[in-house]
Length: 340
Image (cartoon, rainbow, N blue to C red; front, side):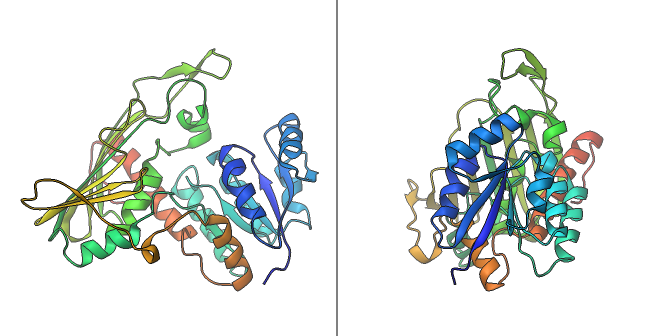
């Protein structure tokens, strides 16, 4: 089926330009009909650079445009909920960027809006680290490392104080999202199920950073997070995230079982396995039918055309990772174990 789907783009930053625009334009019948960005100037510039015919003074006008069948919400998190809820209310399909909302309450409101319009597709851009989710699940299920005991997740880099992506350090724009915590957790939850309890420490070593023009601006999102989380089956996972420095050894996860260790390089798209007693890790081949590659735009359009369920990531899953992020904040603030 190739019937026309008019797509309106709210936000024209990096992922919209590098992923969404070329991704939709590769699909027959998918047409990007309009764009609105943060200012009239940046809207006009994005339209000219990306060859998009319509512009709007605000996102409200884009949502109301009858030529728009589907809205891509590629803004900072503080606008995700209001745009999504309004778009669903106007009968539009919605694809919203990862870091679904400011907090779980907003995410639940978005889910309720989606449930009120079951005839519309509501999808969150999935965490892009799931290249081998099916293989990891298979290896765990078949006992490749015995009984899973612990998971160690490490993540560093990505919010250096240069003014780039400054919104990631501002709670007024990011809410309870802390660095890559939510989307990394989303990946881990695909393997293990959802966390059962959380203890955490958050720290902000750089409460002021240089803004885009070099002047100092407040940065009130933590740049260090240490989390201990329980998972089904008694598995204990630790998440160690830092905003600075190089990945060491990789940005990814180490799964330790009774009979071996599995390493997942989430950015390098590499799996390595070492049975107990092995001298070294050996790379694990990922079968083609188990390897996930970026197909977000195609999946979204296919769900619209076929009426099928969203596989990665539906709003209910987004609520779960926002609940986890909220629990990390509560645990860090109270010093108590919290159930997400």
